[in-house]
Image (cartoon, rainbow over all chains, first blue to last red; front, side, top):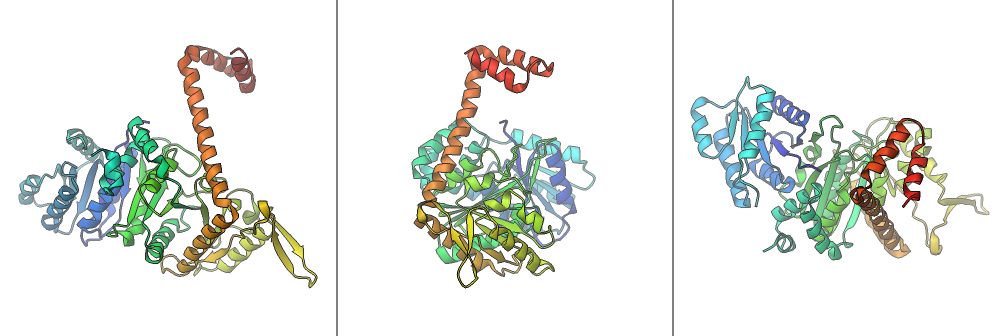
Length: 136
Length: 330
């Protein structure tokens, strides 16, 4: 059995707009990936825990609440503490331009804003996983 | 430290990595699992099956919480969802209903895609369950793909099989059909706050009274009594029919108590050993079939098999005749 990419799609924070996350989950599924969708209002702790238990190859976070500067670094830190520092994180939602370099500095692999096609999202996940350090 | 040692030391990431190796049928993963195998056979395996949308995940969430609170033992959940037969992709959404379990280090949830298997589980689900068992989880809850009528593979994998129904899914004839209901050790009518719940309970109960492993006899007061026909004169287990509203947690303590009673029944009646043997026997036979086929194909007789297939396609031989001819000439 060929290795399947396993992707966690999560919505941290308090906004209830999950249409985007569901569209992304569906697009990744249709490209042949196994997508674990965890639903709304996840804490960074819940996301890191799910990423560990499911041993995913990448995490997609969807944030429209404006809380990305608080939530994303917290997820990054928790993954580091687990020994999963190299796990790619991709971010979607409403992210102001000036925050992008800061988030990239935290190690976010790609930031995909409004207007990104689903094909581009699939390609971004494939690229991020291919470019990640092998799991120990 | 090796992966094996780290798992035995309780490292959760290492366990997660092993589960991935097993799922990918990686020889290294199977080797680790073989080293762990002597430690298996201690966990109680509970299968949860039923039609899509009956509330299996929500029920698993509640049952796991109650098991944690009452027994203190660690709980593993293996949740299987279907893979697309067209793209091979899967959307695994069972965790959505299990958020209450987050933050408890004594709970480990693993989602699995069915990857083409049709029995309601993935090919490697039993091996993943073995890994949890060996890693010291006292309870393993296995949630199947939303299953219809004949996906009874779970009954071979689990010690206690829980079949979840919801009101208004069918009449009493549906309840009498062969298949999944016969595999049930416990029947749960979930969403019992919806109309039709009592009818569903009645239909299931009357179906159980007609079940083949029970022998109804009229006692001299004209009462119907059900007596057992289990081997060795042990009392039979009569599957209870329980009502739950899993979203509200109603009826969950009764489900957990029924699971524990069933475990005690299995221990007392010798059923535990019998089920364990049946499960391992099915696994050994399936593996033997696979390996014999591999051996055949790698013995240079692949072309013969190809020629036999051509004869079948041309309707010159039936599949049965072609295989007989192939094996007769060994």
